[in-house]
Length: 262
Ligand SMILES: NC(=O)c1ccc[n+]([C@@H]2O[C@H](COP(=O)([O-])OP(=O)(O)OC[C@H]3O[C@@H](n4cnc5c(N)ncnc54)[C@H](O)[C@@H]3O)[C@@H](O)[C@H]2O)c1
Image 1 (cartoon, rainbow, N blue to C red):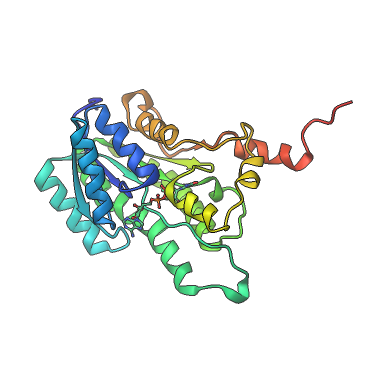
Image 2 (cartoon, rainbow, N blue to C red):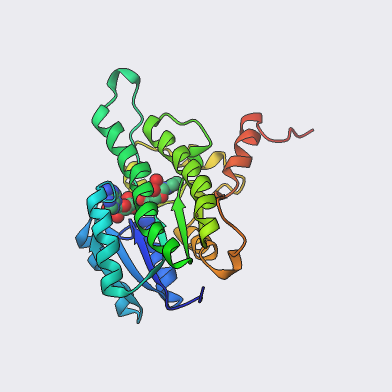
């Protein structure tokens, strides 16, 4: 696959990790299509990329709506040409609550967007890529898919995305399409900033378990996504790459209090 000039669809590209990834792909010469529910923000991202000399377009999409995803795949290809890169970054975070206070609608919506939305986009764009025998998909999972956090649907949805990525990495890998995921650790995106400001997250506690004691930057996730969709990753499919400043490895050290001195 050529490193530039591809059509890259980025769900959730209107904010945070998806936004940074749109900038990364466009900066390397790809045409990015921002597929997001938030039309106003998507339009701003397009303006920014086009203003910097890149190619971008916006498409309003609810990834949890199967008919809309099928229409989007058809319309985007009719307008821009064959899509050879898909990044699934559209997602919802969740407020931790005790069982007594669970919001069942929120639970269902988080699963619907984070898992079902990823699955539907993989299916409808992936089938088209497989028909041409070429493409790369990167799903945004989370380290929460491996750990147990007090966000029931969020953790389950991300574990499901990791499982989906493995299974499709095999099914589509046999048909020329590589499917991988990234499991980000804590990234200071607009939604995280809002959570911190609202007192729902304590940054010092979030970072304490990381080996590097810092946030992952959105650009570091974007670089990982770009790599996984490039020819440099031509033998990689079905895997999930943690980009987490060492959170998955560091959490045990943090629990032990590190190496005792003296
Ligand atoms: N920020 C973190 O620390 C972190 C860590 C691990 C994983 N993630 C994952 O990264 C992804 C992006 O998160 P972010 O922090 O950049 O969030 P964000 O809120 O900044 O961006 C998410 C984007 O998804 C869009 N979106 C939401 N529901 C949608 C739907 N149904 N259809 C289409 N678009 C929809 C939003 O409009 C928004 O533009 C999510 O899947 C999230 O779970 C984030």
